[in-house]
Length: 353
Image (tube, rainbow, N blue to C red; front, side):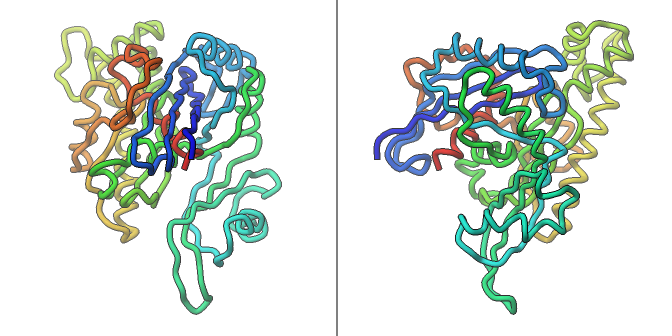
């Protein structure tokens, strides 16, 4: 099997990020680790992407053209992700059948359990196991149902840049693939990606997803709270929130900023903790570790605060761990925030699997 190159593309609220990985013989499970060929990012203005959906396609298309020009990606084929509160992910048991037939049968099997018409939804099923019981051979897995228009808007922006979407994947599954290696592949881990306006929580046991949640809070909500409390601009609020962090004694004149940051972070951490509590109640096991990614994960003190609230160890995830670096890969593109590209790395892993 010849080597294969795949480009994963993440369209986020603050920017577009893409990663090109090269897989040797055997793909992601081959003897040699994948090679990071290129990686890049271009910022987006506030409002171009809202809650995981493109609302200004021309703006996003322009940013993508800039990204391809400056990063020198050689292919226009991309894997894109989807993930917001209009994407439903739930555990479901279905009669066993081959994968191709299963996908075709989904609209007829799951229609009554969805709060949307199957005609308005894109459906997929992620098998996680099998059982045999009174009803015969059954598949256990996770149903994914996305509102068709939330995916279409992102595809329009990508195609507007002259790119070709070859696959649409769930952001939560991409996050899992990017980080589940080494000890994490043997643990029950909670992966928490704190984006600008959304926080994605994926809990997996030995690499198998058991729960996926999208929470409607992210780093921008903290910034907006500081803007409102302190009467400052967005760039000033962004710098101020990272100066005060969370869980530290307030410096003179920073009490309002500290309270604004703490209020939003408390709400976010409580939602994440409640997700952990819900998982514990399912009887699927106890979480061993929390792995943080995304821009919001770098807020000083947030990791320690979440660890204290959940009574679990927390660490920053590194999607580049174990990858080889190609000659064209620039280490300065991402600086010390490599966790920002967890999603595009995982998207590339998915299509090569």
